[in-house]
Length: 235
Image (cartoon, rainbow, N blue to C red; front, side, top):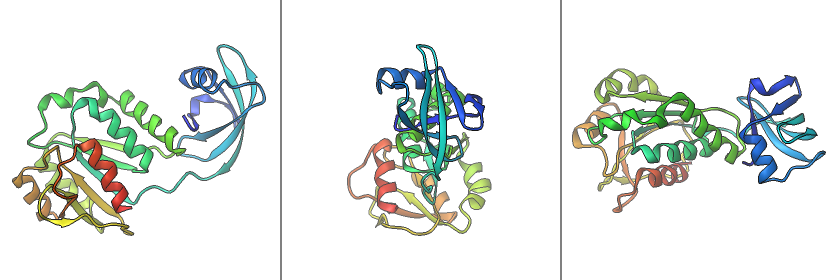
């Protein structure tokens, strides 16, 4: 936890908060915080700042905050990912939140098992929990928006054209297509399939929507590996 991310309910005044939950335990057990110490904080969807410990007990900590700067700029990308295996969902959410993605769509694909959509990691509480962990790592405050789309064809035909409008449209696909571009400057919509890639029909539907297939080479990567590799190459 490189910052303590603060929510509206934490505030007792404009510049004062009281923490009693996981963040308190981390500050006590990992950081060994003392009265008068300073820690980095951020307000959800707001500024970053420095907070001074003004009161400390075994059950609560009071912080007085001086706001100092804006959070880091987001990546210029909308990320579309075929829903991965449940145990990978939390890792991918933390990764994309840490790297600065602010719009994430989990979509269906032929290779996505129906049971994946029943994962408890897709509940609002779990999605927020892992977003927060990613933002705390990156010292960011801007919450990404996560969308769930359980039907591939209606999403691609009805929603995707507007989502990807006026953007560079790329679909990562393990094939002999052109290499993934690097140091992209424009707003981008990036689609990443399940392990092994989208099926041909799905690639064709994305291509008909203006997406260009790109490759990371001959090796087929797991989704949780492909996501940071692609984002790093592109931006």
